[in-house]
Every structure is written in structure tokens, then in C-alpha cells.
Length: 83
Image 1 (cartoon, rainbow, N blue to C red):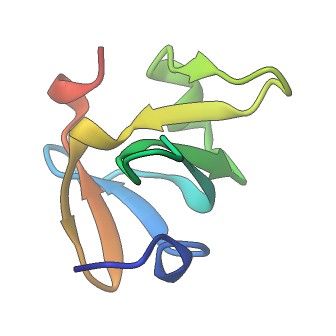
Image 2: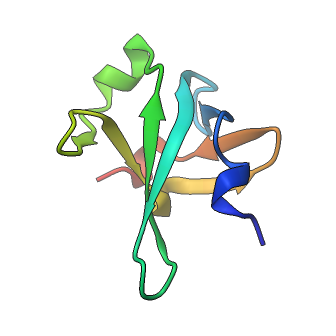
Image 3: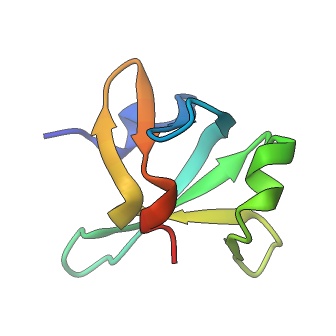
């Protein structure tokens, strides 16, 4: 089980293309259940802007946690799972 705070600062990389999208700045979760909802993108790259990601109330880009495929030295996401 990965703790949310362990994700902070990890680089986010595409499973399909290997492109980097930025780093994890924060995570959003449902307080009652602890379910992770979104990764808040810090230091977004130009490639991240091309994904047409949702934004939070502060204008920060959000990656749905459902797009995360694996967590290790990097966070691997599937671009096709971002909707």
C-alpha cells in the first residue's frame, strides 16, 4: 500500500509514450473513505498542457488517480485512461 505523502515529488510519466508530464504536487482524496481521486500536477510540462486535464479551483492541473498504472521511482499513467 502506497501512502499519499510518498507520491509527492515523484515524476509522472506516460505509459504509452514515455513523455514526462510534471511531478506530483499533492493528492486529492475523499476524507470519509480515503479513496484517492486526483493527483495535483506540479511543474507541468508542455506535454501535460496537451492532455486537456481538469483543473481545481486554484487552476492546478489534475490527473485522475484511475489513470495511474504503477508507482515506483516514477508514477506511470495511461494517457488513454484520462477522461
